[in-house]
Length: 94
Image (cartoon, rainbow, N blue to C red; front, side, top):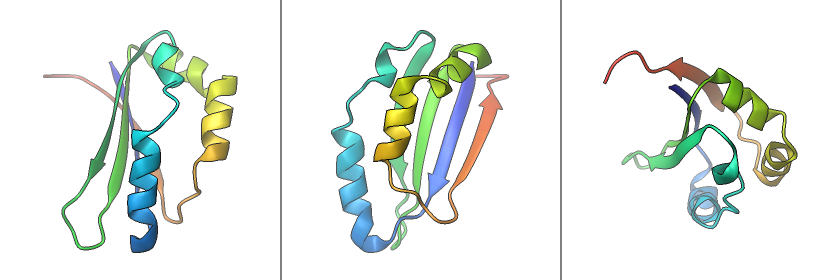
């Protein structure tokens, strides 16, 4: 299994709006072969950090989504976050 994590810290006035957008997302990614789930996590800090965590069956499934029109639309709709990071991990134990 592959886990992809986007990590960012939105401006305080943007955080709640961004969280609402994630909660109301179109869910197009949910229909892609190999997609296993998505979570949006918020830290408890005064200026919260947000993590967007997606889980995939394998790298090929994730790559296929990243090349899709649905991903292009999702990327266009999302706000660019200064200092955002993105990392991909392979699950090697549970």
